[in-house]
Length: 153
Ligand SMILES: [Zn+2]
Image (tube, rainbow, N blue to C red):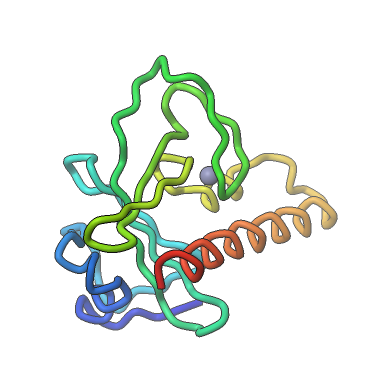
């Protein structure tokens, strides 16, 4: 669990290259607690944001993704982070800036809500199932931070 005390602290979780593009939701209140990930989409729908706790640093990291246009008849695709296969344009190509001239693309849940969706999954009535959910969550967080460490931060 991470505490983000102010808007400045939130903005500084993003890389300088992303900072100009960060649009915080108008109803975002500080201080705010980030449990696993915090995600939002800007009103235009062009950009999606994720803030997560970097396990190696115990600090917040933020990534700005541009969303490619997707339509309801896009073929089903698999999310690189949570491995869900979803149709109707719910998984699509998202890209992040590596440098001013280079972007990197991933196939992701377009709302970046991989972890929220995990919590919605039914069948967490017994201990074994909930351990599996925690394990899945850990793997998703590992994939996010691994991607970011390797390519962005
Ligand atoms: Zn996903």
